[in-house]
Image (cartoon, protein in one colour):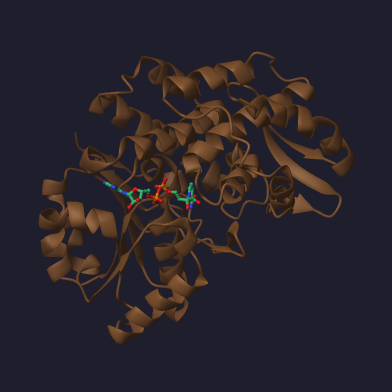
Length: 356
Ligand SMILES: NC(=O)c1ccc[n+]([C@@H]2O[C@H](COP(=O)([O-])OP(=O)(O)OC[C@H]3O[C@@H](n4cnc5c(N)ncnc54)[C@H](O)[C@@H]3O)[C@@H](O)[C@H]2O)c1
């Protein structure tokens, strides 16, 4: 399947987002993308050594990075900058990042800050990154144990999606991607829900995956095109993430990003119920998470105190309250501002849905 996506309305966000076969790769690395500085996930480098060899040999420099949340920090970022400097790259050297959401977040941040910004191509290698993280320009690193506290908005000029990378993706990581897909279905396309209900989770059909990737990028791309800097509508995309980010950090990253977002969806759907949302939604979400083999409860090792402290570090927290993206129903997500008093009343009940 060869699918090129280039929507005029999104021209400043994504000039070209292509789904290609790896055999067609090298022609993408010609002209303006020649001799890039490469940032590659260490697992991807190991597993796809042969396929990546030609690109690696043509590179101006290379930084291999281990995709662990505890390493997604300013220290690693500095190491990437130093490696760029040691490679002697210039302002016209393109940066190509090949990896999952973590490597794309930090690699894109290095590209957006080194010499005040270099041209960027992203090559997502996880499902989660293909359906979500590669698009929209958010870059970032964690700080003081809290997620993505430092970052920039820097949309990639080019995104290359090659679904072959999913062949080596561990099952747990594949499932993490399903949680972000479910989030996108809730926000803007209920046909994705049907695809998730039909998909064989053990042995997913590649046509269904590619169709889902395309639909998710359309939903996210449409929102980001209207509000790149997240001053309004884009906050809807944080669905599941206010609780999800806090759970991810409170679990000391034992929960993967997608697992934590999936749990966040249940809690935030319960918050929506308290505001008049569809009462069946928390169970419908739980059903789809279970079907995908994702967790629907947390164990006792996550301290509630840590969790509430981390929710307070959420970037949508304002002095007089917090803005939540809440799912009232399929394709009916709303931005709702809750005061600390309101949260105190409804959050414990919603969180209790996660008790096993
Ligand atoms: N910028 C955004 O808009 C955005 C959106 C969602 C998530 N994120 C960020 O993305 C990160 C999560 O990303 P992720 O779920 O893609 O996981 P990840 O990047 O942490 O990768 C997960 C694991 O999969 C391995 N891996 C990657 N590709 C592989 C492949 N093809 N074959 C085998 N192994 C492979 C990695 O080495 C790692 O061990 C979080 O840090 C999150 O904050 C960013």
